[in-house]
Image (cartoon, rainbow, N blue to C red):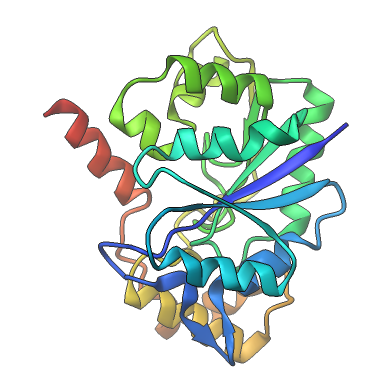
Length: 253
């Protein structure tokens, strides 16, 4: 059984350009992110799906440094980019991750993978009904599901955000095309923000890394924020999935 992890990474960002290459203690957020993923025990291979932007060469240099393969593809059609990253590998399962989650947790990754395999579903994630902090997002789906989405999805938001066509047509959401399962935490901590989309987000991650290092579990980072409200409130006012909501508005136009 081949389990391929793909993390999408691009240099450009309207809200915080070059954010994944910003450094904390001489280590870029992208490097922290990839090294944490590599601690997974179930992933067979990790690849980065980046763009053909000029500055994508900087992302490629980071990946080469830690021996991670890179595919360069479409800037806006991220679904296409994901599909062509995956296709040569012919995987059974795909783990979708995003590079704006520097503190992604390998144990959560493996838990969602095992959950998907045991359930034999088409799609499983901890984002269908968010209970984990924003930034600990893991989606696991069969390659056949990605292929179907690639062939059939046509909305701009579907192409830009990779999986909306799958989860929108999943059984958890009342659909019938994809059998899906929601992986949930016992306590709803979805209001905690461990992602990096804006400068304030980076300041929070910087504070966490400087205080705790880069090798702690997600719940240790979360507990630290709960005990240091002055740090947590720096970015607590931002909306989850703001980029996707913006894409939905574009669809209506």
